[in-house]
Length: 323
Image (cartoon, rainbow, N blue to C red; front, side, top):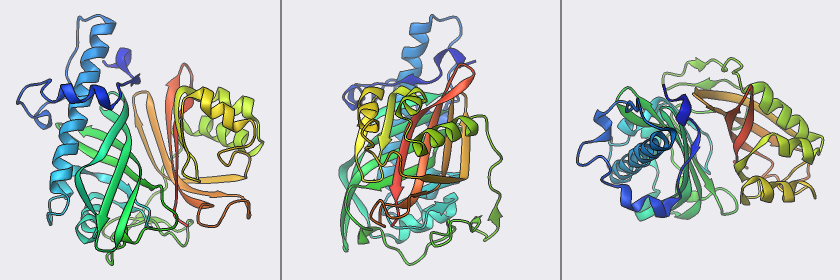
């Protein structure tokens, strides 16, 4: 039903401020995806953009209000949610995420998560922004990436990345209770849920092979081929915390071997999601054998891919080093 409006690049943060009351006082948590039958393509896109923007804003307000209140975070995450912070391990499942959020000393100051850009397809929104947190053991700031998914009537965080712009592992994220997690010391170990059961490695999805072609181009330092496999509006967050947006800027850095391009990249997915014309792969990455400082050479990688005809192109490539 929504194929005509899939994968629309949404407006930047400046456009969000006037959309708080697009749907009046009615909560978006009580609405299914709107039906836009009998409308032109432009009208359809405008209403879909407004709908996603309002959903992201409402979820973000409720999530920020809940941070720091014991037991309040669980309702904001999907049952199969994934949380990645600068302090490994990654948390898997809404119960483990809520336990971590209750245990960490990190707290958001008012207005310290800013949305910069959004994209979406059907019942999923891809969000980029910046964050700053503080606590008894210090502060941290960096890029913020979020995949929101609407499950029936509720919007929940399916994937949430806090990618620090500071060196090392900021102490502010440390917590004694790790909950269900990805084993940081052994990337080959299974991901386990809140009950300790191994979560199966996802079956290959429709976008996996095309992302594999991108990894091949990366490893072969084939900038022309890699450039052909990214979208015009691509987001790239390099292992060294550089952020670039748009094919032109990314290609300019690929040619001289910037962004870590050409350093042998291995990737093993432990999570996948498909929503209309967007696909998401999350997994462990490792880069080279000594070309990068060890704190940047491995971590968690989020790859978002957008359907393009019969194939897929990289829409976002987010490296989150874990040291």
